Amino acid sequence: MTLSRFDSTPDLEIAAALGSGLVGSRAVGGGCIHDARCLTFADGRRVFVKSGRGAAAAWLAAETRGLELLAPHVRAPCLLGSGEAAGGVRWLALEWLEFRPLAGAAWEDLGRQLAGLHAVTALRHGLDHDNFIGATPQNNAPADSWLEFFATRRLEPQLALARANGHRLPAAEILGMAERVLANYQPRPSLLHGDLWSGNAAALAGGQAVVFDPAPYHGDAETDLAMLELFGGPLPAAFFQGYGDRAADRARRRPVYDLYHALNHLNLFGSGYLGMVNRCLAR
Image 1: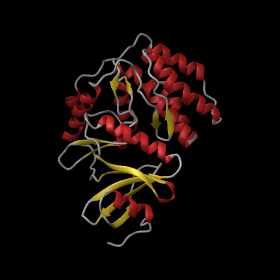
Image 2: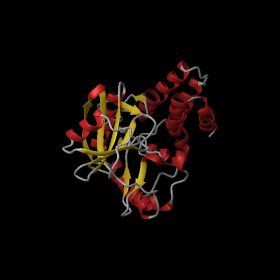
Image 3: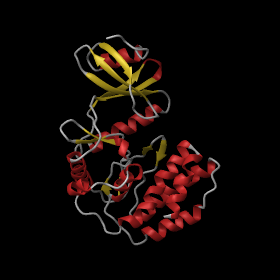
Image 4: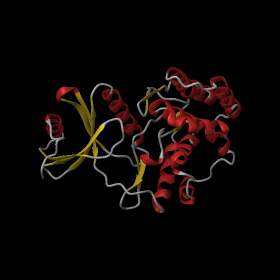
């Protein structure tokens, strides 16, 4: 196999760290934050590698901890190793998986796996460490009240970032809306994937669902369901056959949960997402 332009000292070091020689390296899709590659080793293995410099170290460390949290409860890519290579390149290696779109039995399996994940609970909302939602820092400082957690750890930081980015949003109105919707609502603090849009879940050849790129914390399980629907449309009946019943008034809270991710997209990618923010407010 001919090595691509991605054949470099870091790739060779990664292969050596994982106990093999390097036969091939090619760029693959893997998001907009890291360099993503498929490395082929002399022992026949293929490995998915994310790497980068600077802030990538913190992002990759957070992803590693997130996968470790989820792995006992859902099917996620197996961690193979991580480290630093020449030139300050931080890397994270995961098993190579052949993804297929979610369909049929895989939707049911995803529902069943998420039900198991959400059954893992904590005493408080949050987590014992912060992480990232995309490239944005995510404050997970624990709180007893779900309203307090979602308002002060989720919406307020995004609103402050939007203001710093020059976006004029009715912050007081938004926080007031969240308070009206979430007042007297105290869900159990379930373990969440945290960034479960449709692009962070897929199916394997046997129909098993797999999730990746987590941003976990403990909170309302409905936030994971809302994120799945935000970019993917209504969840199919097969999903709920695996997941079980959902709250009849879930639709009332969904716009508030969608707003967090709409604001984050606004802050990451610019004013093209103002329309999404305004649609959440209108709902």
